[in-house]
Image 1 (cartoon, rainbow, N blue to C red):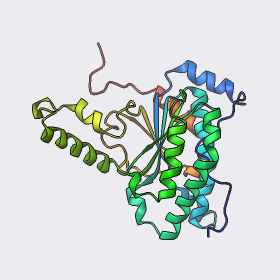
Image 2 (image 1 turned 45 degrees about the vertical axis):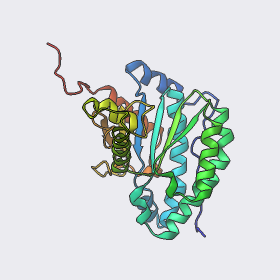
Image 3 (image 1 turned 90 degrees about the vertical axis):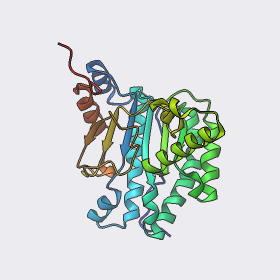
Length: 266
């Protein structure tokens, strides 16, 4: 059992009312383009909890409030895709009690929030090796993915049992199988071929990657897709990260000169 529990995890609880910070959102939209796809490495849950004198798992529960707030803000701003690095392949190495608590949390949350996703026109997507998740997790996720598939608003992607190397490995295997079957000419393989076989094939690459917790690395996340993504690193731990921090990240993004390897025109 998990001690010091907080309210259950909510992937997206988007209010239909006008937010109190609507003027700030409108000002942000007016000053530049809003990223179409935002990816977030939600780091620092355990460290936040330890600094507060709690069990590490409490940090995951507290991080729920950040997930709610950031998802709501992204939906209100018109962001098309929000991809959250929820559980990496490396996270399976964590203590069994922590992993079990996270899986239990995930099951309860997905079941609880399906109606909220439907009410707010949000699609749920999952990136990762779902076969490694407990059967109950798989069932809850697939049921909600299918149930929200026709929604047309924000797509919320949970990266679960995911790593960038795993994603590339799966893509290479699929390409090799196509070559072996004679349906793909090796000389025709290009970047688009790889893109088509990645778990993110139906969405644009992230425009902005936010990492909380102050670490200066991408931790095996979306390795191919982040080639030209703008990075924003903050020392705030994920449980303390709120929409005002998101707006700072987007404002920073809007000031970047994105040349994608080219040069500024003269």
